[in-house]
Length: 289
Ligand SMILES: NC(=O)C1=CN([C@@H]2O[C@H](COP(=O)(O)OP(=O)(O)OC[C@H]3O[C@@H](n4cnc5c(N)ncnc54)[C@H](OP(=O)(O)O)[C@@H]3O)[C@@H](O)[C@H]2O)C=CC1
Ligand SMILES: Cc1cn([C@H]2C[C@H](O)[C@@H](COP(=O)(O)OP(=O)(O)O[C@H]3O[C@@H](C)C(=O)[C@@H](O)[C@H]3O)O2)c(=O)[nH]c1=O
Image 1 (cartoon, rainbow, N blue to C red):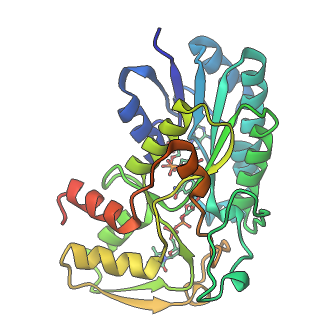
Image 2: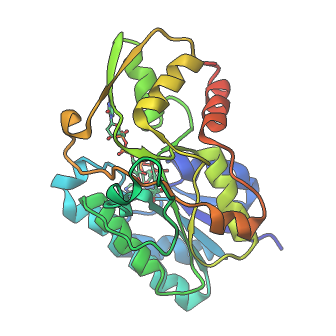
């Protein structure tokens, strides 16, 4: 018998890619089917489908907007996850909860140039902004059932021009701006949804439980990512490095949030592709490189 895997946030970047890779095994739950703001909507939708596995990709992901919209953000990213966890526990459904590198926000000093060490699953979380805090609460809610799987990832892109992410923002801005200013003091590993979705499915196949870090391999800054993007697409756009303070976003962001992939690699016995390789493949898929 085929295992039914329900995916919330199925119109989003990761949810749509998971649905694509799963094909007929996936039941797609977009906002029209399941509204994180309403427990009744969550329970009704899950009751109808009775999946064996629920992958929760739905989330409030507008990091800056969350700073002035905390209630809605916590409702979607924390309380709704607690509701899903309770429902899944009673019916023996495995919940896969997605989370973020933004739960780490004070490791810059420990990781001064030369001594950078990726953050593993044992590293204590230290979220600063509303989005980051709400996602950590969601992790804690999901972890109440030890059989659940929690996957932290970072800087997702994919799905083409209609998706909201840094890579697509750069492509769009470059069409009208000869010069862009981008922060060069945040080190992380932006990751391609195709690779992260495949990795999540591998972890599910291995029946992995607990917390895992999954990103592309190696690390970069948003500035270097933008420069690499314009070099691969042969665009003359000039990228100026600026500081996080100069950019002045509403939400704080970690200066260092590179995630260790050791636990993931040991579990599935394979390496993630590097961020450069991933970016090249995405731009090829977009027919831009
Ligand atoms: N984007 C990133 O860089 C990263 C994301 N993550 C995590 O990965 C997961 C997937 O992210 P990603 O695919 O990029 O997110 P997207 O923003 O692309 O998609 C999120 C989806 O959630 C849906 N959604 C938002 N609010 C509600 C709600 N109240 N009720 C129902 N559905 C809702 C959205 O629906 P609609 O389309 O209708 O708005 C959207 O389809 C999330 O848990 C996110 O926190 C982790 C690290 C990095
Ligand atoms: C558009 C733009 C952004 N930036 C900066 C702002 C920010 O510090 C950094 C990344 O930009 P974004 O706002 O696109 O990224 P952001 O929304 O913060 O991305 C994040 O999304 C959430 C959901 C996550 O969970 C994270 O893992 C994550 O990577 O680049 C510039 O410096 N110049 C620019 O022109």
